[in-house]
Image (spheres, rainbow, N blue to C red):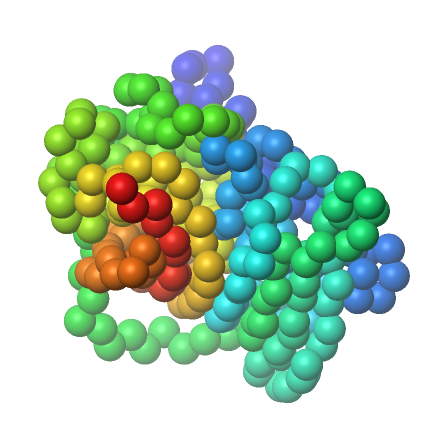
Length: 286
């Protein structure tokens, strides 16, 4: 078998990939789902927020009458750890074109008491039913060809602690946003990259919830180091992404009082803006 055909045969598919297995939830009862959070999606000492949002998104998709997340707003209350968790969901409203639900993820402390980690409010619909009319001034990010960009494997780990999530991603960063890795941060709050899953699985609406929170934080390029935990994250999914790698661009315009915002855009291989997000995050100063 030619090498290209062999590589294509090894590509994971939607529904049968590591991402799907690690975000799969088991319905215990109506509105109650169980999951074992995978250590494969950790960064430093905590589970990645985008992975967690995809987990909650899958539980809501199993609860609500519509299939696709349109808008998802999450408040991260305490850091999640790999291991057992329970998700409780409620239907707030079920309409003809949109349904709204809420979900909370809980883990257990050393005394066996439940601790709420994340609380989400989301509206779901059917992306396939949306009209094709697009009127926008947004433009895709300008990125060098993928072969001229750099991944985690090309340099030292950016932070101390676990970087297991990088083994599950195809991440190629724009060299113009990599000054921090060379000890020469630009001072600009920008991060851009080609993005995909390492096993070749194509993107879908749930994986877009991961994509908006999977790049190194813009704080690195602003000369800061260490964990940048998310306080709140809102994602708008605008369309089902086409097959192929995504382009993600993230910017920060204001860091004040130890908090910054990150605005993300995700573009697919058909040059469509398929997701947008804004998050508020804490940074360690000094």
